[in-house]
Length: 278
Figure 1: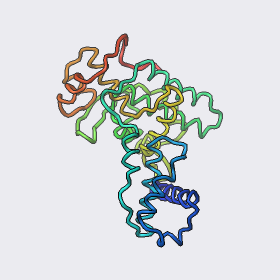
Figure 2: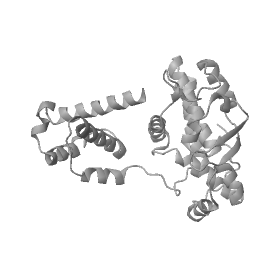
Figure 3: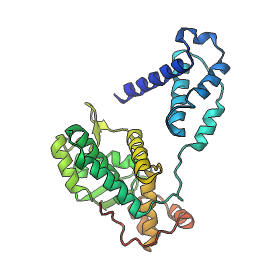
C-alpha cells in the first residue's frame, strides 16, 4: 500500500513538472538532459513549502524521469542548496519543557474537539505517539514497532533496533492507549500504530510531516522527532544522573555519546521534573 502511494506521489510531482513548464511527456526525449535538469531546478521555486518539501518534489521527478523514461539527468546544484537549507537535527537543539507541553496539549485538544470519529482517532493516535516520544526519549522508529501487547504493559520493554540495547520505562500513556484500542479493535499481535488493511506501522515520514506542520503552528518553528530525545537526555544530565543511568533510559550504546551531549548541551533551568504532565 505504501509503495503504491509513493508511486502516486511521484506521478503527481511529475504532472506538476509538465504543467508548469507546458511540456508533453511524448516530447521529453527531444529535450537534452541538461535543459530538463535546469527546468526541474526552477519548477518548484513557487511551491508553497519548506526547502525539504521542494527537495522531495525535485527528487521525485528526477527519479520518475530516470526510471520511466530512461533519461539520466546531470547533477543538480539546486538540490545541493535545498539540502543545506532543510531541517537537520543536532544535539544542540533543545526544547523547553513548556514548549513540549504546549505541543502535546495541542495534539490532545485536536482529539478532544474533533467530532468526526475517524479523524478523532487519528488525533488520538498522534497524541499517544508524540507523548511516548516526550516521556521515554526513544527513537521514533522503535516506538513505531510497538505491538498492542507491548503497549498495554505498565512498564515498556523496548529493544532498540539501532544499538540492540533493551530499556525498561514507565508507560505514561496507558489510559489513552486503552481508549484507542477499544475504538480500533486492534489485537495483541497487531502494531499499535497500524495503518491500512495490512496493518503495517504508519510511515515515519507521515508522522514527521504532522509534527513539522503542527509545531510550526504552535511553536513557530519546525521540529523533528529527535528534539524529544535530546530533551530527555539533557534533562537527565541536568538532574545529575550518571552516564550509565542515562544509557539505561536512552539506550545509547556507549557513554561517549552522553559525554558529547554534556559538552554541547544547552542548559535548561527551572524544570521540576522529567515527566511531561500533559
